[in-house]
Length: 607
Ligand code: MFK
Image (cartoon, rainbow, N blue to C red):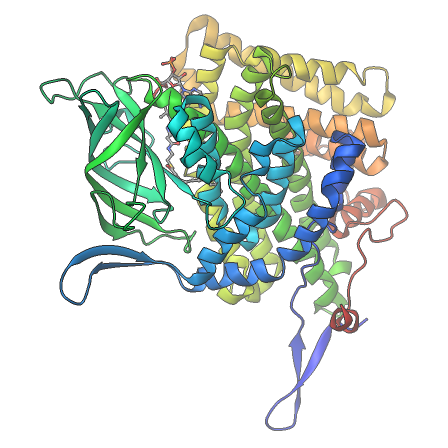
């Protein structure tokens, strides 16, 4: 099996030429996802969506990846004045970005969730496609996430006109009709602290219409047709009213005049110079009397816009897990091509161990994503939703967002290291993955803001009750099975700890304790919940590898200490531990054979 080419230099001498890692079909190669879908989807649904996912899994490493690279390499520019000195504030994006928008419409990346042909599984179908798309698309999933959120908000709070107009555009499969939408909240005075917003809304009598004035500090996807924004209502004397976030309302605005495409009383002051998401047009801008249509009740802007936030936060999970998967795929393929110290990386025990840890993180995170998506899908279908589903979703959304965002940064940083110096080079694609996922722990609520949101959900939505109930149900379901004794005992210890911490906070109202430990607490909740998802999966598959994955998760994440007095030995003499490392790192089946055959250079050229 060849691992390198020989390249002939000008001198006629042959030089070593390293092969690049190869990305195969991102759906078919994702064997853990395929297994998970067998578990969670009814056969008829899975069989009906599989041909599309299979086709799309191939497309995302072909034209879509090339378009994503082109968008990244030619990031948006702001032209403020034309040659004659007229202020035009035109944002120019690469044509590839526009094509990605057209593809998003044709592929139904928003519409699938609203056509609801797969009923409660429609969201899973939609989000699987975005999961495949995200890392190839130069983060076009950012505008899609806000458009998805905007569509849901209009579905819940929009007037007949809005449902006939923008809503239909947001969910259109026709590229000519498809609109994207932004979500503009952040101001200089308040990013996380939205209550400090200075933007004002003055009502135009009798039309439910207001004129909006203010300065928005980060507006993502500014080339969109519309945005949902927050602004503080003014009284009849023009004085801003309401305390804190009370007084803020949500408004629908059209960014551009549909006929002339001129900005609708908006001045763009600056394009943001960001660390990542380079292709996403993000601007600093001023609203100078832009007409805005109120959505939902006056002064209830935060809870109204929360229906967008809760969706964009799930999209954030999609992006984070997709990044983990892409990094593992690249590092795995590379391990078969790279020879160091006389052998391939796929035979290097430490490389395998590192890759196995990345895969472990990915597997648990994928389960989290699928679980939250299924819950979300169920919550939208009449007759399937319940207050306990909503309450569970209320706590799992911030938990999954904060946890997977942080871990995807770690996994993608490790992914760079797996490819060595070349992984650090811009054109290896690896730095982009890290840069793009770095923002997932910031936008849509930082890790700390979301950790506090978890406490808010416990206090105001009683969300810990269904959370612990489902954990207990899962533990109960394996209580007689010997192979789950080790993991169940550790999960029970974690539940005990969760109860102790919660009791101290809720009974003594010890908010200082709650705040200073909020992130640790959120991690404890996430990792415990993820353990029970791995448990469910292992119970279903009854495969020894899935039980090993569960045991490792419990041992590494919940127990923390790496003692030898348990089924997992960390000594190098334990051949089984190394066998599991190999299986996870290289995606091998029980017989040690690859689930996805490695494609050597000669096979690739025929591919
Ligand atoms: C690939 C992925 C792409 C992602 C796209 C990213 C594009 C970037 C676009 C952006 O705009 S990034 C900026 C996003 N900004 C944030 O995420 C703000 C972070 N801050 C928070 O999350 C605050 O917690 C929040 C503004 C939501 C609330 O702050 P407040 O002012 O302290 O309000 P409060 O009193 O906690 O909540 C007000 C009401 O909203 C309460 O209801 P009641 O008045 O009935 O009691 C809350 O229960 C409700 N609420 C808050 N968060 C909620 C929620 N309801 C449902 N779900 C939630 N998540």
